Length: 433
Figure 1 (cartoon, one colour):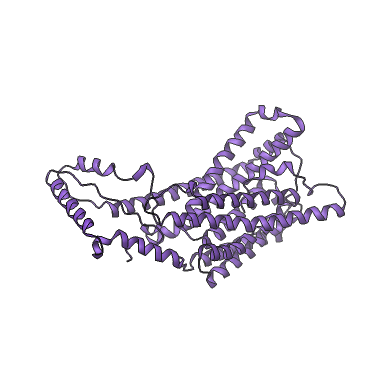
Figure 2: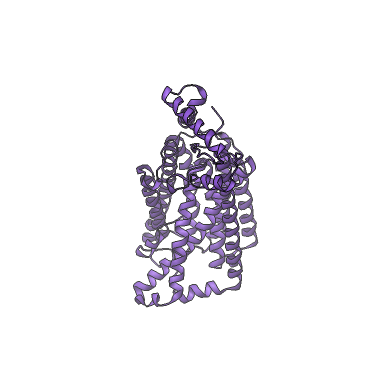
């Protein structure tokens, strides 16, 4: 999966390019394999704990920042431990071995999503995940020939790789694709928030439009924060596009994160050998700046995806997009495609088609929210609609009559009364009762 702690990589030994005997290389190789398997499984548990925190926060009437939630903090800690396992794996084994082992996160995600979140494992979801695993294995298999070795490079070598016209063209196209996906995801989010606002603040005829717009604009976002809005406010087509857009965006950003982390590790290795003179060049700081931009962006949209969509879809889709993008980026940067034979290109493209087919299978699977989540959501909605269902107290009825009387007086003088915002907690239809 996505490696967030690979700056620790130069602190660990790397045997992929060493000349040690086979008696010492084999144990080191298996250390990397075990670390990759354990790290991938731990990553899935951490992401499911973060989604559990988001789901629980959505049940509360008074929303709080998810960063302060203990469950989310525990999930982030476990997520970091999993990435540390990936860093250890990359230190002891080639990347061409570590990347396919990341598919174990899909297996772990199926079970952790069921036991932690209560999400039901459907046959279509299991089949789609298995198809994605086969596709990812086909993508990374051609890269096993001399790829992923830890080479002792310096900053000048990295810059020469950046300066290659073919890689520059690919990097520009990749960045443009990333920006287009980011723009479209932001557009869908804006549509979702506007639809939520239109439902919570329906337009009413007033005599003073300016005053009413000012009155409405002062009560849009409570507590100065943007509240959670379920993707059910989007039409079905746009909702599916947002569901796919989040993993695609995270995978594209994570590709740059991994590449920049590897380059930062190279800089640290050079610094340990030649001193701090490498930080006197502006290129080193540009790399670090890019890393500090990509890491928070990746974590931000990962949490948005986990908050709005089921983990049984987000994790396989992210693994699919990230594996395809990362392998292609690494092959272009390290000139790995130059070593490919014709059958390798065919296997690579077959893996791409198979992975996308598996993604289509799981994206069309119907996923029911956990039973505990549906029950608590409907109870929450009924409590917010108590005045309509006739179950509210006498004090609430008196308060409602007073607010209606105030609204009538306000409409007579051209003022729009402030409305209380109803926040629908999860990905259920807000009109359900």
